[in-house]
Length: 229
Length: 362
Image 1 (cartoon, rainbow over the protein chains, first blue to last red):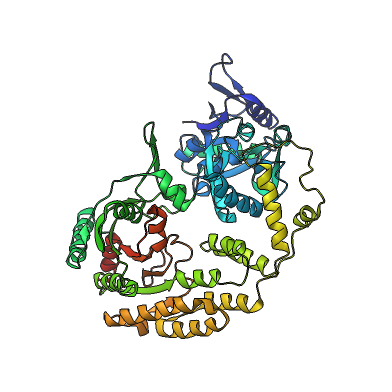
Image 2: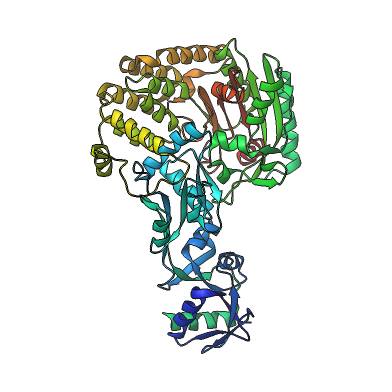
């Protein structure tokens, strides 16, 4: 039996994860061609590398199908309502930093806070006959955040990509999305609400609390944690 | 733990009792159009109900309660007056507490009657008390109509009253608005800058989105108007605050509320209705001298109730949801009635929890 480590299967997140482990003497690599999602681990015995989409890693950890995994805080909080019970944080990796925020058109000079957003939503519904639409893929986090802030008369519309463009296209009035530099928001004439920060996210190494750990896996786990600390 | 057939049997027995009280048995589809529920409850309902969809009918929800479809049914085809009873599954999404059921049986009783609201309130409450007789429960009552009357009668602008009414069910947000309208919170800096700007619309970013310039201007005008409006008076504020803290047995609560009405005379008609309800409950044999009244009862969870509200709670079991809840929802019939309306009151019971409490008591 081996300790299964889940890592994002492509892009900068994969490369940066590989170099984070490399600095700690553990070499992760893709075996075979670039298209093959199989991996190799050198520098420690008993660990196998599973390459997965970052969005699937929370679910795999919570199901105990992998023992450890690297993915963003945003995805964990969105996909696992009771994440503390299912997984624990081992280490923040210091990259992939991004904020989940609420943004409105920059031309809404009267809207600076959630309180303003709520008032604007009430008036908008009266004028247009439908609730103010907020485009996002983080439905649960955004809904809980807005409920807690007492914002009403809004509706979440699903947007899995190019979310910043929805306002210009008039398929949404505001957005809730991940941003790191704010560049894309500015380019699309959007601004962040001053109290619209929902979550600060970064790439994080997690450990599953529900995966089964035999004697062998326990030993490998404690060696791995030693090496990483 | 009671099993499903025990729960079904208990539900059937309770429904028969409601039939004996004059109710007609009704049933509603399990799948409900999502749009109506979303319009009524807002986006929060998605956290509480299961959503499904198909390409033809769009989004639908697994029935999260009976009240809405029963009201719709009555408003389209019901005769007056009407009494309905039903029993069946409702579905509630659970994301935080694995011990709460996501599917359970409700038995309900709803009265649509214009003639004697106090009598109908008392009828529903006393029938529920009868169904629950012998169980170690605590009953609590309240009246959303008193708070509503207090807000609607404030000596301030309609806009402020509408804002407070909109957040009546969100106590924290209500408090923030109240403090602002009473001038207890300084105006935020960004607001001052906006309202004092010579040309707030003279920005150099493009106008985008469906919310047009005229709507932004209208809000700025509204904010300027509001700034020139005198604050809600200390008397009224103190009245509202003491109203919300009233927590007594019914006759004493009425007495305290009559004192509050010195500062808030607008609640007097609502208090007269409370007095009539107390008399009607007494006439039905309810011991009102031991029945609790909490002015804030039902303020956080019962969004469509607008008058009498009540709940029955298991003593010493704060982990259990209420065993029965109900109340008056006149406004809901107006909202769903396309111009028609009828005073309505009703509630639901949970036979599964009743059996659980019975088992524990033995």
